Image 1 (tube, rainbow, N blue to C red):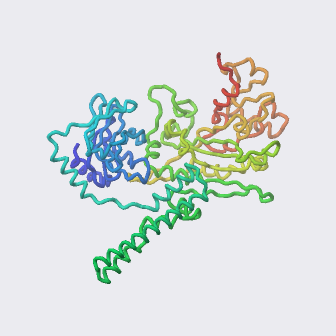
Image 2: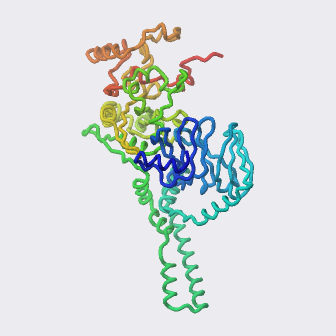
Image 3: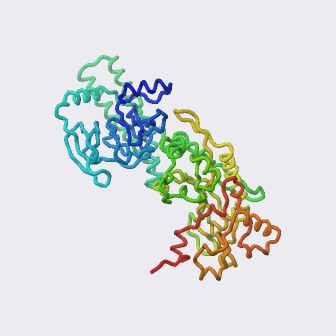
Length: 533
């Protein structure tokens, strides 16, 4: 298929998928990968839109040109303006950059049956290798193609430079100084104002030089006034610095430009001063799914096809879940709970400063992304004593209501190929053993008669029985009945190892009995399970 056939194919489908396509390749999975204006657009062999890759950030000024794919269906595309070559997987997920220090404007790409990649660089003929990514990366021989290359270079010289949003670039830079490099908030405005002073000094010097130039060449008054207006006019750079010269303005920029989800403050008990913060999970999901790479992972699950268990979606709990079994594109929410202190109090005062944090990430993302901080989203923050005074049900009420909406009504995501309604629920709740027992309604004392949330083994038998196959495992039906008995007679709590039900069990497709896996790090490192020597 060439570009003319591609445009005809697009018109036949009455869908505008491409703006200015330049290069295309057919991937090993039959997808058609197209270098378009500012993006790589991928459609399947039937012409159905799959995803659009715009670079690793909105400000990357991505300029795709030559494109090819390797034997593992990874897509490799030249990014001329940024002097890089991007490698993404077949679902649009970024893998890495292929580049070396002096690489300039990579253009044409091709790859052979041995996954040797060839590229033309506009500035030189260099050969370089990256054996961790591809077997080799060498340059194509351009003999006999000089006219075409010269024509391309002339065309590039005529290309109009894109408009740059200086305020956005500066705002993201200042926020990275504060959040990534941990510069104090009071320092950032000082840096901005210092730059403004230097800009003013530069303009004063330039104005003086311009006056001297005007006098020496005896320019008339009209020309002098025009030059003066040009010099005194505030530039985009100066305007950007002025608009971000205080902490208030920087925070306002972040809220307006960076898909900010405003936390909501709740007061669980009007007789107390306790409050907690909840970040609406449905809004967070909408923002996440607005990114094509995240959306592509939802629509193209990573379940194993060879029977090997590699992730939660390959296990029996996932397969027995009614929502996940019937809808492979359902959103899997992995919920985290942990308590921490933001200060370092001594002695008994520590309980007054402990904070409970609830976080989430998408289980639809491949595991390699799920350990990255930028993939983990805040759900709620609450002082631990507020949880103790009011209970988890009261604190998590807004979250549970949103999750019920997600299960029954779903959320609507608009893409270029139409609207998609996605449903989802909590797949697992991850916490340390104390946190899981507290949230799950199990006994928090590990010296009680039955202190396991998976089976009914006694504390004494736990020291000598290690094969779960011969133990009486907890079931949802059994758990429901025992909770009813404990609610009627609290003295039965140690007998069943229960205090009550888990508030998350109100969801249609989640239950604490099979939704709270063990915390392997704590169990191994704290000596709960003995490792062979």
